[in-house]
Image (tube, rainbow, N blue to C red; front, side):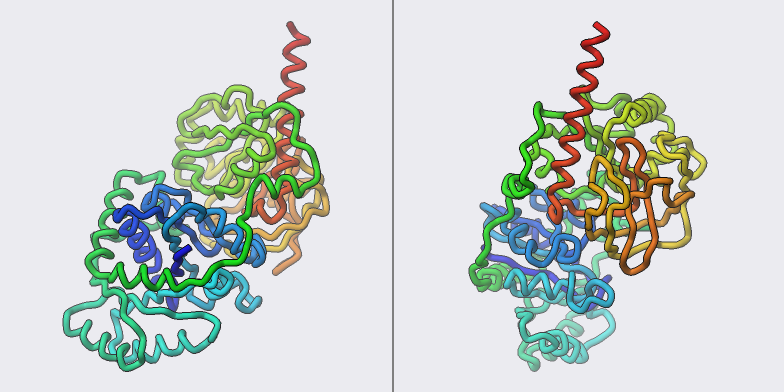
Length: 464
């Protein structure tokens, strides 16, 4: 599998611009391009999917474990002609205090993939050679195959940069000029997701492809990608992961409704795959527009997103809020992460939400961000007490109280505290988790959904 890792010395250098543009440019050549993102980010993969027509997939060595990075990559890249992996932060930045863990460099080594370094050259000339030399020599196991210079100001500036890098023996694989018309809008948690600006996002991706096509040597980049050696691993499989849990699939085929639309855009593709492998039928609904849960819903998954941006619209959809509240009150299994937690609250910034939880949420000035190590405190539809998972928090909201009488998680690192709510079939928390690390959670949730759906059918039959 030809493959490239697109990295940078620091955040803000242009990784997303270059990676998305490369994906789109190669896809326009008729290649099947597999898009990947190092780290927990949900938003960039949406742009990757738009560029390639394939699901954007994350490779997170902290949440999933280093041993699953290559198998997950092979699963996503099956049948493709090229894979492009966008890095996270700076090349060597990873989980705080954990060395290289979850860094782009670690992912590149696990994938045995050459790295292309995107350098913001806007305020330097010959110094670029010293910068690139440092990144190339810091870890000899990381193979830096070339540089793409971003935000180059003029022809003269380009000549000086090329001369410096030629002197350092580092190939220049592309030069991109400043192009503000290609910029994508951001807000409090990063880029605005594709689902909120689909037409504009399409135009932005097309512009990125044009910029990369004009400024980068695509043939040289493809030749570099082809130098990646064979990857000796078996692709991850949701069916194999499901079989490894040791339990039979639930009887029947329960419907698991998954929140989507502009307000709930954060999800990992593997979660739906694991639910299907566990015997569930996954159906997406939009809390901004749909006034009822999908027919026959046995389980409800409400992932991350931006309900704070859409609080008035979510609140105005009173029929669906009532349906969610009734589903939870009847003991239906609900798995809610971050945005889902806010939606289940009594209120969000003063706007009525579903009222499933005796808690109120609001925007905050403080950004909560970072990896967490957690253990399930209470038995729930998602996890048995004692289940250990690694996760990630990323929000600018607070909920009061922060935990219920039966908390969802106890954090063991980097701080010790309890968080979230378990109530009836509801498991609600700020913590984003990646279920491939513990496939039993998908099996457990599918079983709970099947049991609830069966109980509803039996009750309806008794009434008849």
